[in-house]
Image (cartoon, rainbow, N blue to C red; front, side, top):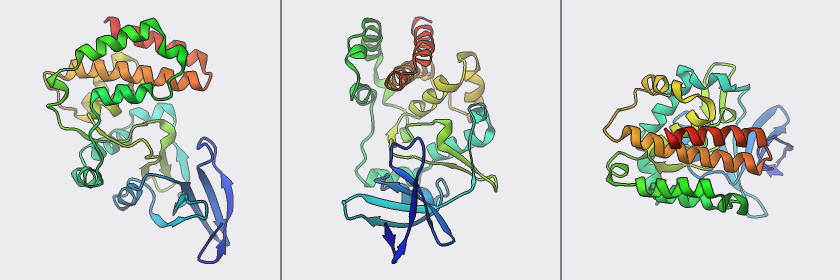
Amino acid sequence: MYHDSEEWRMTPLSGNTGQAYMGVSKDEKVFFKRNTSPFIAALAAEGITPKLKWTQRTYTGDILTAQEWEDGQRLRKEDMASSKVIDLIRSIHQNDSLLNLLKRANAQESSPKDLLQDYYQGLPISLQSHTYFNQIIATMTQMIDSDFFTIDYCICHGDLNHNNFLLTDEKHLYLVDWDNVKIADPLFDICYLLCHYFSPKDWMSWFELYQFPLSDSFQKRVKWYSLLACLNLIKEYYAEDRHYQVNETVVLLKNIYEH
């Protein structure tokens, strides 16, 4: 692989399904990603992801982006309640310039029905035919009313996993892997994070730190988006054969649905 007549030694990075690499050429080290979101340049300019160095189309037709390599560490699960994480998520959700840029790129708002359709994409037959899950989805469909459309939609990362947060050695926090970016209710992002990392008894403390506006529809939307988050997590864990996590999330799903 070449850029500016220099050869790069490429090392695949774990957890990125063959799409991300560390590239080394002479004394330079960069982060390569194949076919990442074209939105990455704007995110880099805002300091949300590492600086973009260049973009190049390969001979296979893939788009390769190169970003500055940042020495640091991924966050741990217990870091997801830190003020740094909450402040970064809130600043992204409230970034109107990035939102307008995404809209100008013809990105459409993802309604609750759209997000349910996303859930069904690639869903295994055994989950498609699950009686209890289908009962919950039928209830979720009935819950959707005007309250879900009268709030301000924002940029949502779509995968607020601790592995996607990079804390550099200089203590700058980045959020990477924007392949699932959407325009949606901020609760789509937040409830995924909460269901993934926190007991429901701790959720309101997190919302208070975020300074989330408590509207009349807040409780109803939290329930809806947390049900969706559980379904999506079960889908992820099932695909990875993580049976303990599947069962754990089913218990959470049942608790949210029945209370």
